[in-house]
Amino acid sequence: MGALRLSDLQRPGLEPVSLTVAPAQTLCIHGHSGSGKTLLLRAIADLDPNRGQVFLGEVERTTIPAHRWRQQVMYLPPESHWWADRVGPHAAHWPLPLLQALGFDQDVLDWELARLSSGERQRLSLARVLAREPLALLLDEPTANLDPANTLTLEGLIADYQQQRSAPVIWVSHDAAQRSRVATREYIIDSGRLQ
Image (cartoon, rainbow, N blue to C red; front, side, top):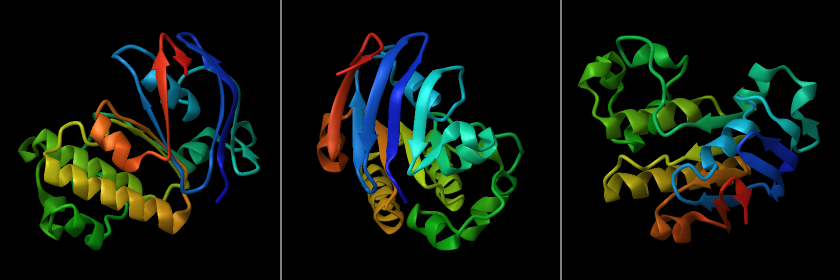
């Protein structure tokens, strides 16, 4: 798949951003709370009103329906939304090897959400995203609630997925050690300005 390219992307609280994330490249972004990291990811995913252009390969996002864009360029928020009482209905397909790699068996699909810890929810949120096979990933602190072992497991799964699919990734992380492990390039965002 092609690169993820932003051209003068802007919204309230975010100054114009132009950059390219090549296939299989990870761009890490960090900055203090409220600096605009999440605003940028949500603008790329077209979840909030914004101006400018975003391309995935040769496809400009306004040329396809918004729901199709969000299936191809998937945003994983720090805390994902869950709407059913049990895990299973939250995705049409849960690949067993992926669940097992994240430390779950097939029976997790019958678990009630109230039983899940914040770390289990975060791991299952990643599984739900990867099961949909997006072409690019927008990751907002995907390991914030995880212990070191599970953090490394998730980083490995994301790297494997990224290499297999040549997926560009934008990854928000406050963890300097994590950024040094996963980033191809790194930016700081401050007061809505990417540097």
